[in-house]
Image (tube, helix red, strand yellow):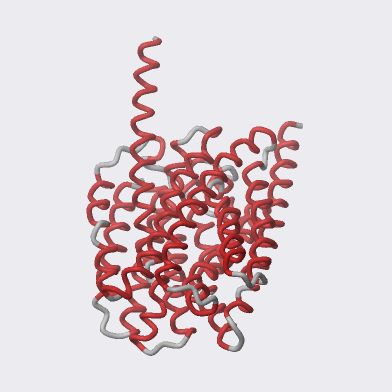
Length: 409
């Protein structure tokens, strides 16, 4: 009996480790391919003679399509299993990244960036649901934190590569380098081992998810959070290089260092802190996000009103650390609200809402506000969104605690 238990434990570790390791690497290239363009916005803008609004639409088009496909792909992953869904998604966004490098006009580039969003939108819900199912509840936040280290590092490396390689070899060559590794990862996803509990599922509906007040409030908080993140990330290179006059190479090195130390560190910190808080409070994951967003928004406000370059960069680094805490427990918050058979559908619905209403419009809206003033002035809008988002997640934590108390009674 004990030997059988040990064999089952070893098998469990094997299937948990393989998805976590591979999907973390895939998440790295997911965000690298998305955000390398943001590190080269000024170069692309000069090449095609674009306005700030047109540059912002390179992010908005990607994220609008990403949101739409998130809603459609969640039920597909629940019904048919995530293996082929994930593999096809990785191959598609990698192909679209390569096509972006050959775009002869702004309009074609816009279409290619939208196709990158197709692949990324299909990928997200199945990956989140798989990892939430694979991890024990008491370690779910830490598993998701490790997974989202890939996001933090990939997004940071993408920005830094764009800022560093774009001026040297051109933005087209940089996109070629970014797109090629994805085809190897797509092949690896085909043979990745999945736990039997998520290999296939029954037909599900989103009605039960959408009817929950806690889910709707979390959706509102996530929407405001992704609006803020998208606005800051898209315009970070422009803020540092143009309005703060940081040399482009130095700006790229700073974004790389901050992404590694603060972006990845914040995701790990959020996963760990969320799990610790979860042991003491039913809504611990939500509470962790709420506190970090309120604090991060206030620090970001101080950064915008700090004129010395040294203190400004230090406050920016602290802001990234606090805001990245969200990336650890966010998917766990959604997972805890639904039965297992609704897992990918719930993740897809959540991703659809936050990216359609928050992530997608942010680059163009911030660019539109900056067009009539300055980027520094425009960035007050996403900063305010973080503070309100934090308050909403605190409210979610209270609702989760009340629901747990009612269930025990």
